[in-house]
Image 1: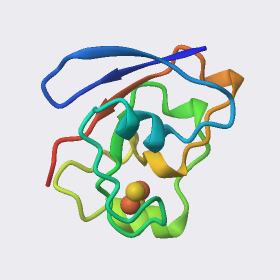
Image 2 (image 1 turned 120 degrees about the vertical axis):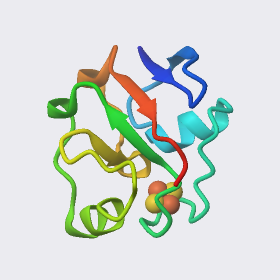
Image 3 (image 1 turned 180 degrees about the vertical axis):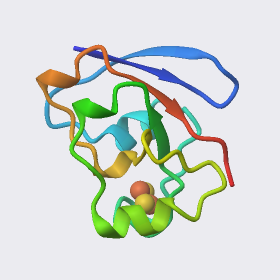
Image 4 (image 1 turned 90 degrees about the vertical axis):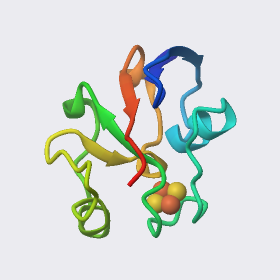
Amino acid sequence: MNVVAVDRDGRVHELIVSSGDVLMEVLRDNGLGVEAVCGGCRACATCHVLLDQPSLVAGRGEDEEALLSVSEHFDSSRSRLSCQIELAAEHAGMRVVVAPED
Ligand code: FES
């Protein structure tokens, strides 16, 4: 399956993914500028993305909400930490935008 990711320069990338992949790792490994400084333990927010279809993904946890809500680019309906999103079949075709750096 694929997901569509838009990088910080507005370039659109169609990425081939598998169920069980972590979105942050997919974005980082495909060179989309996701640093993921903390390695995925909800401590850095350098994996911040904006989802076009947020209803496809479970809501933010408390830690995630606290970390993202201080970002200049926080969008209460669309912001997520990509390290907290494990891809599954229902995410096929999902579009994500890498959030600007704070
Ligand atoms: S990689 Fe650090 S919070 Fe997601």
